[in-house]
Amino acid sequence: MTQPTVTGQPQLDASATSAPLSSPTGPPSGKSILIFSDGTGQAGGLRPDQRLSNVYKLYRAARSGPDSPIDPARQIAFYDSGLGTDADVGTIPLRLTRFIKKLASSATGAGISANVVDCYAAILKHYEPGDRIYLFGFSRGAYTVRCVAGVLQLCGVPTRVGVTHGCPESSRALRDLAEEAVLTVYEHGAGKPRTRYKAQRLELARRFRARHESDDGGQSNAAPYFIGVFDTVAALGAHGWARVVVTLTLLFLLTVAATGIAGIIGSATGAAYGSAFKITCLAMVMLAGVRSFFRRLKIIRDYPADPWWKRWHLAGWKLRFYDESLDRRVEYVRHALAIDEVRQAFARVHWGDKHTVYDHFVQMWFAGNHSDIGGSYPEDESRLSDIALSWMVEEVAKIPHPIEIDRTKLYLYPSPAGVQHCEVASLRDRFPRWARRL
Picture 1 (cartoon, one colour):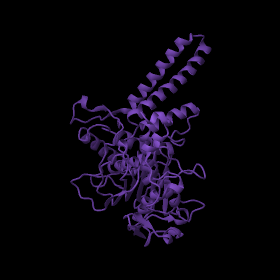
Picture 2 (tube, rainbow, N blue to C red; picture 1 turned 180 degrees about the vertical axis):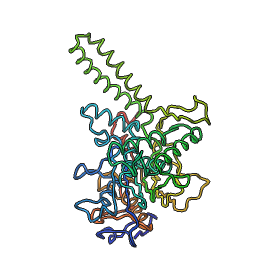
Picture 3 (spheres, rainbow, N blue to C red; picture 1 turned 120 degrees about the vertical axis):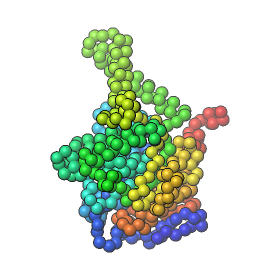
Picture 4 (cartoon, rainbow, N blue to C red; picture 1 turned 90 degrees about the vertical axis):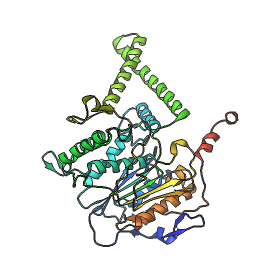
């Protein structure tokens, strides 16, 4: 149970953390599908003593498996690692290429669409009518699951693909379907003023639902049951000097790569090194430009409401969170916010329409900075993040259909006396003394 401390922060009783298993009461009515999306650089479970975010801690206690008492017929959990991790860059073979991809993802938010597709595809893989969808995220992972909620609001869950009922079983076909919903429908107008392409996006969503039979009386056939997020970030990428440093680093690494490729071309063809280097650089720039153009190109066809030149545009998130909408059909929403975070890129992100009353929407401020809320500090410095996680666990336990949690894998020790961090001061301390005096 939640007990208020002298600071007003919620705290779990010791007895609650030692309970073997918390599970829903009453007759079963569909299974629970849990989606967990982690923050930048977070990929839990890779090392025994790894710094873990609250998202991964909760996932570890809610997943089914050979070491878990949770029945996968009742609850399925999917974990999506954060941007800029080894898991995020997939199976890119060359170490330098993987490093460049990770650096670009961490600094610019490149690849966020793939995270949204991953999470939405996991829902499509497991969803059946009557199931409940729970979304959890931290930082850019919170951004990700909020986007997933937007995809569900527009597209729902397809019940037909071509002549086949239900979603495809093939992983490639399933991902193609998820990419259609995310890249073609949801991201239409991304990075633009919301009203500019709203009508076009709604029309694309209507067509998607009609084609895949996911319409329910003029709206999608599925919505999240519960959304719980830790401190959604206001921006996807680095800003200011950090962005300059990252850009210069990427240019240097690309130059190194081009130098190596030019040397290989020169050796194989006998061409002068200078010519081979120029050709390599030009080819890399052209390839990146063409790829970026077609990934950002958004088109709506057969739409007489707009002239042809208004039916296409280049979309892009532009390092900001533009979609602040909240589907009123989401039954429970919880957002833990960092009251002591001072970095501009981590400012509070608005959610929902200020003129709309949401019955079960709670946003709670907690002491500490960004990761004091979402976790990922060493375990002996995680008492503040335990407060936020305790609150989230208690909130999802109070709803009519709580998730199942194996308490033997989630011991929390929340304390308002825990270490409070400041990343600005921490970054300053990394500079030599002479630089700090400037």
